[in-house]
Image (cartoon, rainbow, N blue to C red; front, side):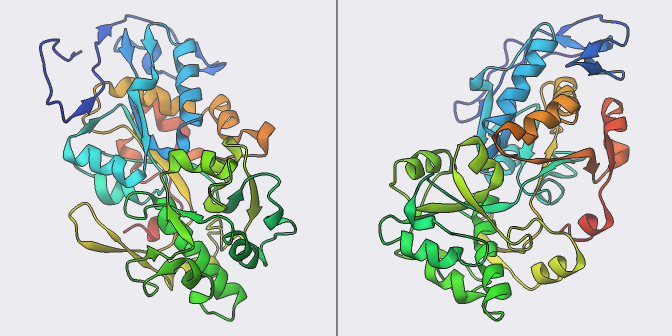
Length: 371
């Protein structure tokens, strides 16, 4: 067993959750969160107590993951998960924080399952676990009359009318997969409903040729994910294309898309359509990089430099449990995520033993479109 020395200091530019690790000799199988903990970290001699769970997660997880962290705390003596130890922001910000050393955490979660294998493995992570899916939707303030009668076919015209009163919110595609997914939903809408013209909807809201670097037009306003919901609710913004989970947890009304437009399909037709499109983002190196559409799948890992990897594995174990699935689904509010169990992993041999019964290999189609 190891611990972080109390005398260790870090530069002020580095935000890190300090972990004090004390051995806990807990034996037996035990139960956690209402179901059997199969050789879990909390039931082994290597378990830790008096520890703080640290999380780096995609912005749209900022309501759901704290619920999971609280459940872990309630069921595991001697650990804590304060809000200060949980950072939720754009997924590309998450990966950049880890690779640059400005962020250290026990759990890292992203909104595009391709990012962990592409940007973190093998140096900064050994595996990922895909735990949930949530499609893109058009979200807006409940009761907004501009969207009366909106459906998967006519939503672009409804949105154009709505922007006469308030701008359409867009995300930063270079830091947040929601940004490039928003672009792809517009392109796919044109492809499927406007005679294959991928610019039919896209060109109203973005400057730049499809496939190139996109910037918003006068109808749009760049917003941070954490602020968009309140700005929609107060009418400062008209709408946003975002994850269904974001709409659900923030109490927003939304228009479901065609499954291909919403990046929810993984059949051969959808994958063929996705392969025809791309956009460009600014990478961590500052150069432009191409991104192609893919089904929206959220994934999680325990970074290689996690202060407390056992606690990180315990969190993922809970995430994949029946209790975790119930929190993800949030059925009482209309369904946020579609939980995936067993979780899909790109590297089964690297998954810690506590998670082995909870995971299965990535499906062939998902493996095939990894970068």
